Image 1 (cartoon, rainbow, N blue to C red):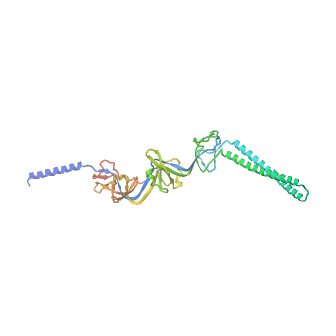
Image 2: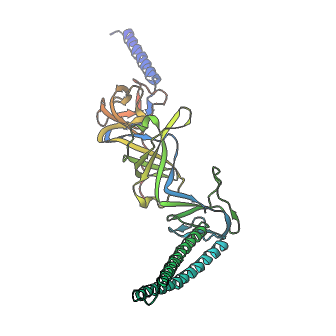
Image 3: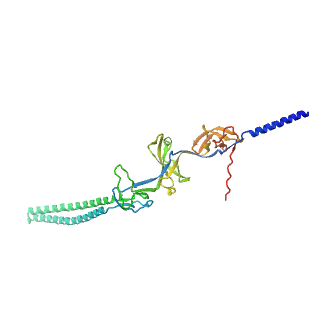
Length: 388
């Protein structure tokens, strides 16, 4: 081969190599993406509250004496635990206590009067019987018998009247005791004193009709707690009593509490325009877990409507509109797939068809350049630190 042609071929080969190198160097770099493998696991359909709920007590009483007066005794303090029937507050009631003592003395007098009058009635009855016996023997006149019978009946009436006065005295004592009890406030159930409005020596005024005032004592039974939360009216139809619920609290961010639906309000709340909700109550399953909880904590609930175990699932964040996903193939090219999906929640979605176990799908859909046909590499996960 002539040397001229050889030189030409070498020049062409060098130019082609240079052009290929330029094209290779100038091609787009692979996009770095985060991926998740399609693996079997649990998938649930859930509904959650639209606004923050709160922890509430099964029993909470804001109590006050039914009458007004000056606070004489206040043996409890805020935060103190009390038992049912324990004294919470007592108003000054010396005058009522004195009236009750007078009623008791009057009762004793009435009882003594019964003994006296009824004994005289027994004597009069015996004399009337004796007079009738003497009349049968013509020892006394009919007039004497008549007077004796009248005296016996009069004495019996006096005895009955005296017994009535005893009953009246007992009723008077009961009324006096009731007046005294109106000044005494006792715990209707065991619980913790959440609030006290008043101090010893201050005057306590009961609420006028239609005008609520602060309660004297706010008592909470914290042995039974539940969460009340609003559910959107669209989701409320799926909820039924006894369904499993997961409770999360802002105060315990890394912990979930198990519960179940105990009540669904039979009406819809319309507190804001276009925001109609139904109040749902979820009680805690484990009473031991709620001992450290405080009434009023903000809480969220997630109610499990349906659950499936050991089904192929992917992160819900990997789904695009139309139930499409991007799959990172072995050749490093992103491929778009349309899936047939089943149950879904904010975390996982069930895949019925369109993916095989172990296939990698892209979860970083918001990154620039992530699209079907693009070259991509999976983002390497940081190695776990060695155990110390």
